[in-house]
Image 1 (cartoon, chains in turn blue, green):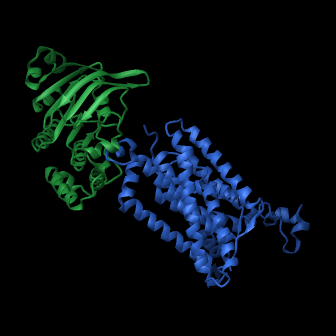
Image 2 (cartoon, rainbow over the protein chains, first blue to last red; image 1 turned 30 degrees about the vertical axis):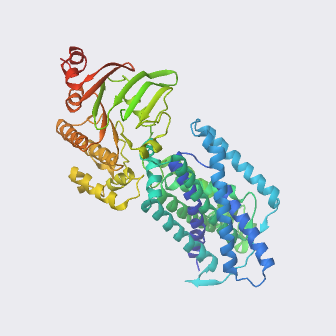
Image 3 (cartoon, rainbow over the protein chains, first blue to last red; image 1 turned 90 degrees about the vertical axis):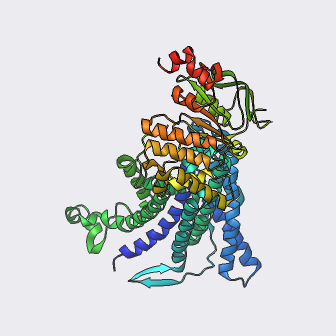
Length: 331
Length: 236
């Protein structure tokens, strides 16, 4: 059986998480044109809080149903991350609202480092195993496997994306957010308290990040104080791929990136196996390639390369992203 | 006491003062025109009155209260609405969403719906395009939308910045008819215009601004008849 379908399922799972994280980047960018590089750390904080809560509950209340524990973990991670998101905007970005663009960007990197090292102090420098309380029921689909956790992640992401879309397109706050993202001053004339809308944007993005953190923690079974950095960069790539500032773009970009990454990781070994090249297999590598041996140049540990490869391609050929508007320069 | 009273208002951008200590007053229910050449400081004056730029000196009183340094999002709640220069419609929002933004400060659903119908009655073109994104509207339609949006907040004082700018003559006429109707409804209006003739014909009183200062203030028909205004602003 080909690994294609399996990798597609894995990619869809991963992509759902990227999409949820990418939304946090794109929402903030849409409103204040800031790339909040500390957003990945919010995801890490979400994972860490959930891990702590799950561990404590499982120990304190032995017979507690796993779904209830997960529910409580999410209910703890979300408000903590919302507070972190609110706090970073209030303390670090708001004073720099009128500063040149580079200043808040550097500050974002600073916040990211601070959050990482706070996590290091609190949760140790070692990878922590994320308690696997949900079990891992597997279902078979046309020869590929999909776990209950994967199903939960995909369905959960769809629900979050639907909810966010409704919020942004149907509610008063959502319309105000879109108005603010287009013209801050005129939104103010309409009576929108800009500071409040910006805070709300950070808080909503952080809530999504918290849930994404619980998802990746559960999926990989591991949490580490640096986990947010790579995840954040990939989600940022996904947001750029879809067109930064564009909500649908972030969702599409996230899912595409997850799939590209999973398929890439699945096939790269096969494609870079030098034993497939007949003159090498017959000549210099004859010894390695004998009896179905192989000489793989790049293995699946090169998985992380794909996201950035995609990012570079997008930046070269379609800087505005898949769904982004071609706005060359906004005044 | 006048509804709006401005005393010694100064506004500067980074050391350059665009408005240099002006006095003006608008009585409740009046339509007052503020005319002058490009760069005279008219737009800056309106921006300061609407809380978009902070004045560096002077005072602004509205309905007997000092509103000198209040931000726009609070001024709109007191009944001061600005239709900004260049219209400032939200081009990515639909016509209906733009109008909903106009009513952002209101909670009375029934009243909002009634006002929406009233605006659609005033501008049937907007009703036809209610579900369209505002960026697809013509300049004139966008100006109608911007005025309609401001009216959705039920303002007591309406500040209009160059409503005729860039519009075809027929559309300008239509816009001025609407301004007249709004004024007859009892809304107090301060109208900034480069089209001095039209503005003074619509207004009861006028101020003439030059290089950040008010150089003339009188009844509109007196200004229309004065040689100074005729030569400088009416091209006669």
